[in-house]
Image (cartoon, rainbow, N blue to C red; front, side):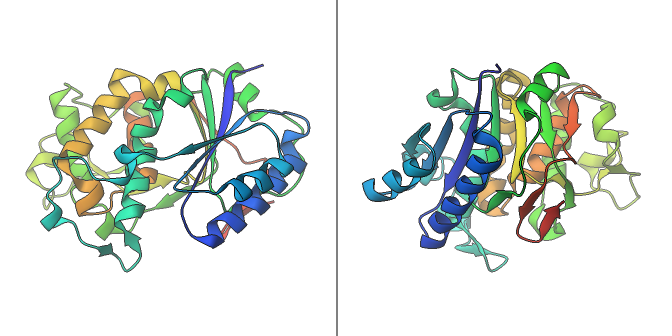
Amino acid sequence: VPKAVITYLIGGRAEHYLDLLDSLTSLELNFLKRYPYPIIIFHEGLGPDEMERLRLIYHRLVFHRLDRQFLIPPDHIDPSKVPSLIGGHASVGYRHMCRFFSGTMFQYPLLRPYDWFWRLDSDSFILAPLSFDPFRRMKEGKHVYGYMGLGREDEYLTTGLWEATSSYMLQHSIKEAPALLQHHLVPATSSSTPSSSSLPLGTWDRSYYYTNFEIGYLPFFRSEPYQSYFRHLDSEGGFYYYRWGDAPIRLLGVSIHAEEGSVCRFDDIPYSHKVYVVL
């Protein structure tokens, strides 16, 4: 059996908790009855009664209240440059979440015993019984990342992200686009910024993985290559200044560092998240 864990992160709003009750119920009914993996629920302040109600649905739950490292921006961030909202919805708390999922999550001690994680959001729903174990598919296929769908990020939410990524690749002597990354590039134009046009890479097309459903090999995400990319982006401050999302960062980080053939698309799991539905 793979050493694996399922993770949720829940905010402080009542609707997040109500969604989680339904999500966990669907997961227990359609997956956990047959494959009883442990679950870690990262949270900002669930009470004892709320935790007990969740345990009545499924017993293998660990609750972890997020600490100061998550709830306060790192010291190098200039508070005067941090907008209170971006795009009318992305609060500073939302940007904490993006940073957490992009890199700091993988350093949490609670995850050390595990080789695999499956992230679901509180409003992620498995819609029908699964006839297979996604963790086993990942392990047997020697995949490092599993996803369900692709999207394209709004341009205003990617300010400086490709430039920062290009500078990271230059610093690490990555002079040609890795095979996975080539699928998400368009040819560079004469209007490209100097940092991106100095590499024969083209320009990222703003693709991202839908990270509300993702399965990953934790040694890959803990590794120095992936973590060095996260640290480089973190030092730029883009999580807080521009709302860089974990979804595009996941695609870029995986596409730079993973081998072609090591990424698996799950298109046979009945699933819904907001308007995204797979039947």
